[in-house]
Structures are given as C-alpha cells and as structure tokens.
Image (tube, rainbow over all chains, first blue to last red; front, side, top):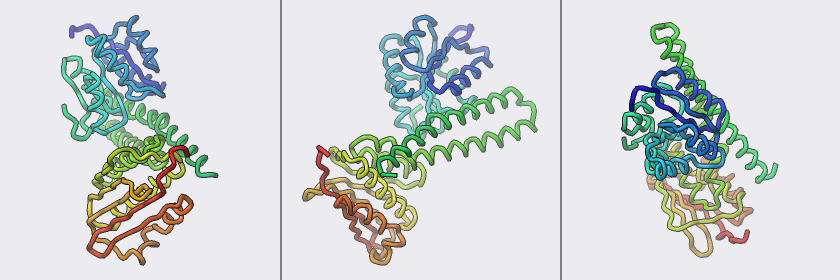
Length: 137
Length: 208
C-alpha cells in the first residue's frame, strides 16, 4: 500500500462502538474513515461511493451475519480486504471468518491490537487476536 | 411467571447485556487504550489506566457469565443437541471441564419449556462433575431407545452413593422438574466407580 491513508469502511451496528472505532482511526495518520454504517446493505451502497481499501465488519449485525458481506466482497471485490471484529473468542468463529475471505479476526476491546491487526492486513498478511484459542495465524 | 414468559424475559435481558452493555464496555476499554497511547510518557496516569482496564475486563467477563447463564442462544433452535453442544463449550471455557458430546443425527424437542429443562439439568449434572467428581472430563451422549429420548452424562470420577447424595447434589429438584413431562433421572454410581446420570423423556411428538 502507498503512503496516503488507508481508507477504511466500518460496518458495526452498535452506535457507540462504531463511533469508537472511527475515533480510534482518526487518531492515526495511517488510516482514514471512508464510511461507517450499521448494516451490510448500507455497506454495499457506500462501498461503491467511497471505495475503501479495507472494510471492518462486525461478526453479527442485528439479525444478519457480517460474514455474508465478507464472502460477497471476497468473490466480487477481492481487492478490498476485510477484517472481522467480534467479542467471541472461540477459534471456530475465527476459522469461519477466514474461510469466508476475511484477512483478520480481531477481538473487540484492545485498541493497540486492533491497529496492529489492521496494519498487518494492509501489509498483505493475516491477523487473528492472540486471545482466540489455538487459532491458525 | 410461566416457564415460557420467564425464558422470554431471560432472553431479553441476555440480549441487552450482550448487544448493548457489553459493546459499551468494549468501547470504554478501547478509549482507555487510546488514552494510554496518547499519554505513554505519564507513568502515574498509566498506572490508573491499567487499573481501569482491569476493572473493565472484569466487567466484560461478568456480562459474559450473566449472558450465558440467562440464555444460551443455541437454546432457541429446536435441536436439543445444539444447545448441549453450546453448553459443552461453555463448561470448557468457564470451568475447564472437557465435555465430549456424542450425538448421531438430530434431536428435535419442539417444546421450549422441555428443552430448557433438559439443558438446565444437563448443566447441573456437569456442574456436579466439576464440584464433586475430581476429574476434568465428562461425556454427554444423546440417543433414542424404546420410544424415549435419552441424554446420559458420564464421568470416571470418584462417584457417590446415589441414595444419600440425591439431595446434596441438587438432584431431587431435577427429578421434580422432569416429572410433568413424563421424564426420569436415573443415576448409576458408586464410590470410585464413576457416575452415569441418564435423563430420559418420551420421544417428543414433532407436532407439539
């Protein structure tokens, strides 16, 4: 990736948590928020308009799975990298996210780890939070 | 409150805990992390932030515990095997008890109150393994025989004398709760011989 900020789309249905991720990204020069929405349908609209490099998606959004969006982007827009965020520590969820095409599975709560994970994905790698038991890296 | 409306209320509270309170706590935890990185040269502030982060982690763990106690999400599906599989994961994560679930095929239990009762009793049986058996593994087997659905919790721990331990191991209440459904709890155990606790109910009518 070049030196201009990485454009990040945020797909997270809890308003405070969505705002927190946006604030966190705004504290960095490496990232900028392309959009923040609370649903996968909102994400689809904004992806076309705002052309993110990276999309951060919550594992579960109200009544829909974020992995549906991840799989769709992996198929139709593979140049957009997806990172799944979640509170669930089970490795099975991380495996499902990676199998759907996500490059990262990051647990909610640790801001330093979140940024480190995004950087690893931007650099072409994959990232799974340390606290996810036994997950493949 | 009837069994159904109580479970509905428990599910509602569990959802609020998970979907709202937990997300607020994650947000606070991340904001504390942001403060830390913005003031990493201030040791005194850093010490306070460390304490705040620890309290937030404890609060998040508490919401997880409450959520799982109130309403396992797998309970909302008809197959009692799904809920027991979920329960096995919880026992492993929270109590370091390895639980092998053996179930071939599906075990639908359309009546939610019966399904909840079965899962709660299996949970109590597994807690008994944690508290009394002195081992860290148990097996839960689901099967059918003679027109009855059977759920058997087995361990190879220290065992007990069933007649004397039914009350102390919290099992007489389980027997009472199964009776309205035509259910039974049968326990085979002896000191140092392990324990096999079998819950049976009439095979559920799929139109129920």
